[in-house]
Image 1 (tube, each protein chain N blue to C red):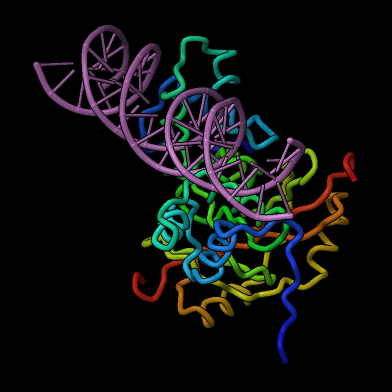
Image 2: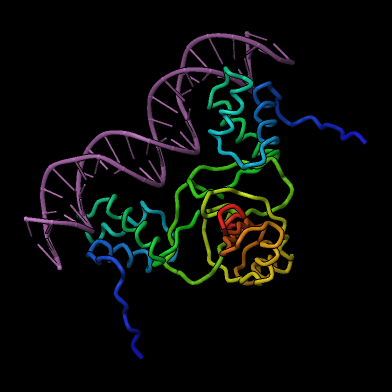
Length: 133
Length: 133
DNA sequence: GTCCCTGCAAAAGTTTTGCATTGCG
DNA sequence: CGCAATGCAAAACTTTTGCAGGGAC
């Protein structure tokens, strides 16, 4: 069954399509600069600012996720919008996906303890990947 | 009963002591720049590089924690070394402490699923603080 | 024609390093 | 004296913005 492609609520340009495709096809949580380099391999004329603004636009509209999961300071992007967590190898910096799904009771407990209206959470495990352990 | 003050495994200078005290007395997870400003209120001659290097040194030796929990890009520091999590208000940026303690089974499950040797995790909840909700 | 988008460049914010000087041991 | 620590300044890196030109509608 074919998935109906819903129109995105902003103008789709070749540049934005290329950025979205690059993020969706990546499996390594690339930074903005890395995405820029990959997109430029296909659209050599594109500028970094265009890639950067496209990433922010896609994040705002929920098409991709922005993560602060690396050991470096740069933000990383994830084309997998479904709820999931991450794990980072503290030796080589690799970032993997994890599906844990904290039980909803956890958020309720935090809400009760802090008085916050809890919307969600970011969870990143730390460890050594099979190659580094 | 007095707690025996163990000597730190690196040279303690007045500057480093002031930085450590500033972080330990802070309850708002300040950035390096904010810590610099607070320390300078006491030691007006200190330079930012000294504060910055002291923070890195203290992090390396486990005296304080470095967090990537803010909505801005700057790292934040926490004088509370005991295991705990955080919650950030997505409206005003406030950062609070949370004590949830994921059950150990979670880490074991992640280790089994990913093949990583899991050392720990970073968990930050998102929501609206009582003042912003 | 109007408005949004792009590309280039520069500015801003944060982190990191080079180096001469200082000062403790 | 010897070496680590400091303070200043500059470099490096990432993020963000200004602006002129160009294309879509």
